[in-house]
Every structure is written in C-alpha cells, then in structure tokens.
Image (cartoon, rainbow, N blue to C red; front, top):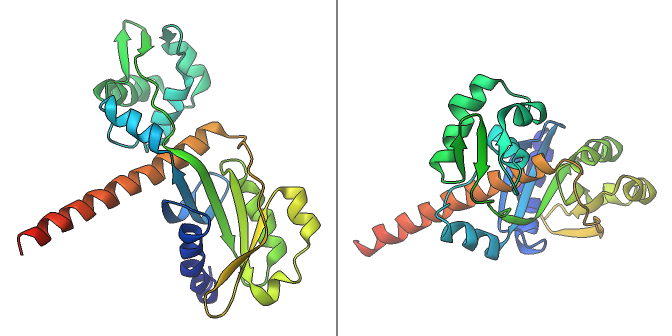
Length: 233
C-alpha cells in the first residue's frame, strides 16, 4: 500500500462505522485470498447475549477452532476420523490443542474417540464488510476485492473521487462488488451499493466474525478499565 492509499484508510474506516453501521473495524485482515485493507462487522446483539448467557464471553478467533466447531454434528456424536476428513490439521493438533480448548470453553464433551457438541455458539456478527483501497488502479482493486466475496457479506472498492468516475460499473456488478469514492477532504460516499450475499466460505466468514468480535470485546474491556480508573481520580 502506498502512502497516498494509506491516507484513504482512515476516512473509509470512519465511513464504515458511521454510514455502513459497522460496530468494529480492523485493518489488513488476511483471509487466505489476499489481505483486505479493511474489514468490519455489524455485531448481532441477540447472538452475543446468548453466548454470554451460556458462559462464552470470548471470541473463537483461531481458524482451526472455528473449522472443527463447524465440522461437528449437532444431532449426534462426531468421530475424530470424520473431523479429520473435513479439517486440514493433524490428529495430534486436534487431540492436544483444539479439542482441549473447545472442552475448556464448555462447548463439547469428549467420549473415547468421539466428540459431543454441547452448545453451538451463535455467530457474533450479522454482517461482515471488506474494502480494498486503491488510488487509481481500479481494475486491480476489483480483481482483488472479488476474492473477498468468499468471506464477506458485502465487498467494496475504495478510490479517490476523480478515479470513481472512470470505474466500469458493469465490472462491479459482474463481480458483486460495490464502490466507495473518497474526497481529498476525507468525505466518502457510496457510488455503487454492494449486494448483500451469502459468502461461499462459511468457515472464513465465521473466522472473520470471531476475529472482529474479539477486537470488540478487548476494546470494551479497555474502555471499562479506563472508566474505572477515572472514578478513582
């Protein structure tokens, strides 16, 4: 990313919070399909509250944990060979790292060579948005952004306003990507609305949701600590 492209990030981030109604954002999220300049999530209040009621007040922000959790059957026990056929990790990692973590969180019970799912945590985010920012190379930005549709519900390309007028809207439509223009003064606006889609990679969508939820929890924790400290001043 160039320095001028970096100058676009903060205005777009604010736009995501204020106008796209994101509750939390993050920069440079690696999704296995490139690195998205920005990602954001609109959190699900009901889902987060249900997790809290069931004693789950942390994010499942490790990719293997999410993969194994989604591979477990909800209606009956799941065998370890079944999990290993669907999740790319070693049996040793599954037995010694992932399953103990899920068990510690109270999500599973282990029975010999089987796993029983006790509680299926709701996804913490209603919607995930990804943005690719480029100064003038809008074709490259679209080709990069289309990869984010594998995990994001909405994907945007962000360019300077003078570049936005040259962007091929047909190409945006074809790749299911929206367009945000950025003024030199930092004002942003939507030129083309991104469609709200069901991502093809459920695991990666869930991982991004959990990653952003983890950031939101840490942000709230820091805010609470700061508030408590202020009370003693």
